[in-house]
Length: 333
Image 1 (tube, rainbow, N blue to C red):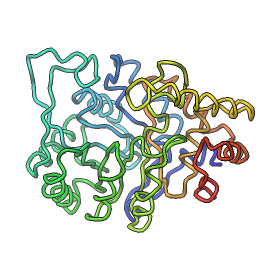
Image 2: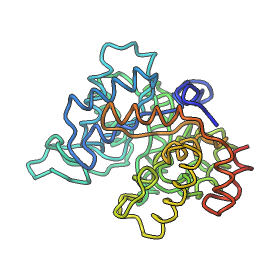
Image 3: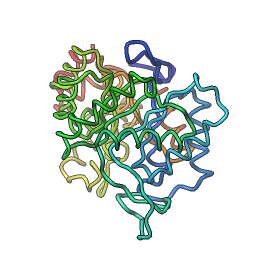
């Protein structure tokens, strides 16, 4: 299995135009996902990631209605531009509002703004321009069409061509889509010329849908897979009654299954979360993992998980009990 050094090390993407960290810091939590995050804590998370060698950061206007981008931009200010990679997203424009925004769409402690869905050509170009302003950059490295589940026609007809234009203009280096489902991501791979997909919750110790047809499509097209949601909202980090699975309470039978996975992990002296990370990173079609963190402690814990040795025998035992896909050995050889 990969060690932490390999996980942090840079890997090529977008036909060699970019090098990204094998571990990408997801920046939703520093924008107040689920609970408010103060500026000092957010800065500590970013600083620790940087100290540990992480150089790729994934953000979005959606995350804290711009707060995540603003905090990331403040942190990166003054650093050599060629030393880091920033991924952001399009599909939500931000506008000022007088309404109560606390807790809106799961974010707390945010600026007084609201989100307006817009996947049009003009909306995409305006979104990138506004993101660059919040980030303090003149370009972004990766731009993703964000959650177009109910907007396929305009996403394929306007958002994708707009990002393709921006790529040709040099305003963005790589383009793609970021979603919580594999099926539409596969359509993007097959019907467009994208560079990457950010697949959230599509592949993990307890989810194989992404590996069935999305990953092979990406392999054939030379599209990078950025795997997010490897903890499945928390149940793969701390299985217990009330643990979250895809943003809702995990079903009791799933908690029981993960508790058994954790028992087998403990028998090898391996943390459950470490096994979850290594399982995903070991798949040959996964380019990098996106891992969210709110604080310096969260970041360091994830790096420690990546540095923990995970024996293949553990995954063989999990497969033998039917707890992970039987194809694990073939897929991860």
